[in-house]
Length: 394
Image 1 (cartoon, one colour):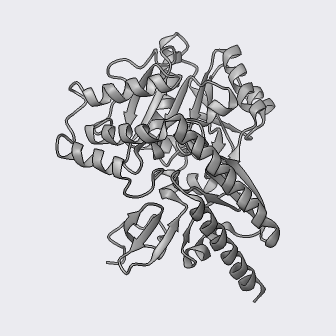
Image 2 (spheres, one colour):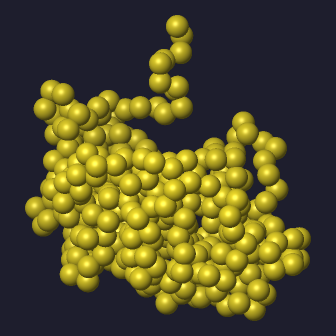
Image 3 (cartoon, helix red, strand yellow):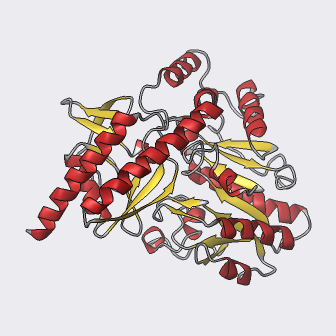
């Protein structure tokens, strides 16, 4: 056969881990990498965290899956916990971030349908956003690399420039149901929204009777030093999509909403075969046990400050590096060069990173890193930069 058994939609690199321990990954030959990618912000407690592992093992031996046709004490417990920790009054569990965003979009549209405004179906979204790979979620971005080959796409979104409040306001018409925005764009280049922008969207939503929908799939769950990034902006959404870190490596996501926003989400309007299964709920509970405490969040803020300071101290030593941006332990290193080539080269120095738009390298370590991991990361970044410069000069 000419095609590989794995559908070739990923240009897979040479790293092939078979084992993880803490902040490191290992292949079958024992080669070690410092994992500052965390499965793209997923493994927030690192690899093999004892509390998370034990919770999953215990639940796997008890009950893994039944059906959402039946009552779920596990879902009820986790939903109550998330409601207590957040703005939300109700939660729907999914298997991924894209599914969580899909549910969030449906929730926003269902609200207007249920309240007598079915013409309000379109969400205003923002340039360079990433909301997932489904047909609906790629429709919500203007990134050609995501849309190419799949058009015509649903006309459910109106994309305007990110962090441009005037453009967002100008796009409001009678078809608009709300705004869908990442407080910090991840794939788009680790670009935090300004406080004026997010607060302005909240004000516009209130003024026009619209829904403010936040996509915190990547920036949520303690990564920025608060449980969710919007807390640092003093903004409360109506609906929020989360995933990635909430399962610590187990595939799970959720759509959170206020009672008002969920007005239209009644029996039969949405569903999932696997969403909220007992095994996923055990993982979420274990993650929240560790990552939702004030002490842990304070440590994330402290480590984020220390990592940022170390990066900023390193930058003047290499013309390749421009500046650092982001919040907490969701940081982006802006390059004066090709970020994807840099990430590829860093793997040869035993460091795993993630490329992003705008020639940015995403630095997304497990939230359990220690000082020596920060030093090791900076040393490997510096060595990679020196080799990158030598290669460019050759």
